[in-house]
Length: 163
Image (cartoon, rainbow, N blue to C red; front, side):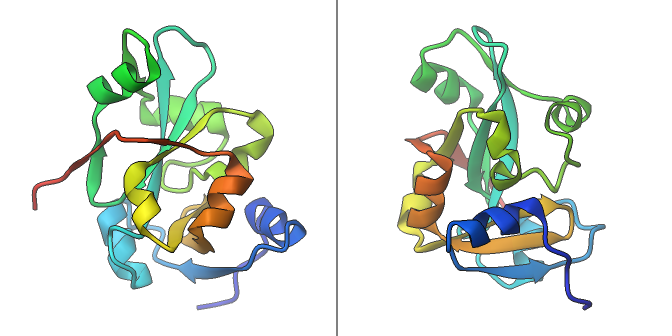
């Protein structure tokens, strides 16, 4: 594949001297587990970023969880002390972030200062593979450095997906 162009997420990592690897995949792949297979990493290391909205807040939140899990909205609401949490519809997520679904990345949205949560399962990984901010491009970053850079709060909100 052709060399990818530098995205703002990569510039941010470069500016902070955080090493990363880029991995390209077919932009037609939309399923996070299929992305994991396409970039050659286990689903537990490849994280998707979801946009959620809380009943008591106007500002959305970002939740990163392993590609082989689903978000438990009831546990999310309880953990954050709100009455209700909902996933943003695809169109709303794209409007709010300015990024396409499948390319939503906490690294590309740092200027928005939205709360960012990482499912606790991420702590078991030395590196995380996340979207670079564009469909078809992932970055692999050391987990500890990524968590610190993004100010991630650790939360237990993922459920295993039955295969």
